[in-house]
Image 1: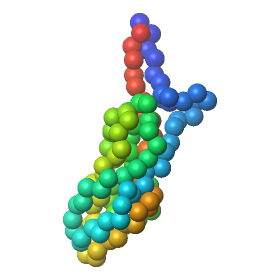
Image 2 (image 1 turned 30 degrees about the vertical axis):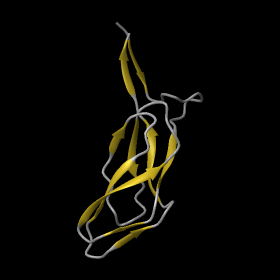
Image 3 (image 1 turned 180 degrees about the horizontal axis):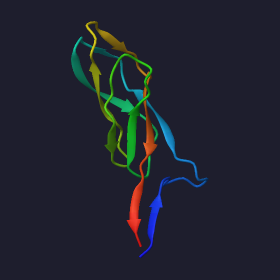
Image 4 (image 1 turned 60 degrees about the vertical axis):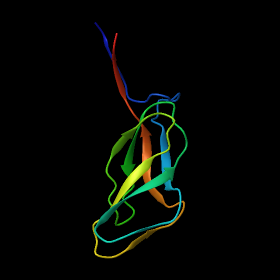
Length: 103
């Protein structure tokens, strides 16, 4: 029984597919709170992992989402100040997921 591990599904050139995840509309996030925010990104034909881009004071948990869906992310504001997230702000990156199949 051979084992096949595909680390780059949906890619034709051997490189993993990466997409920017941007905030859909302007949101104000109160201090010490969590807010669900609808985001926009290009569509993937496979499941994908969304990870924080690390360019803000907000925390974004890593999530796995199904193919064809727009991400809805939980943004955590651990500070004592209000945080403003503008429309089209780059908040995270989406990477096509990996699958393990046994042949």
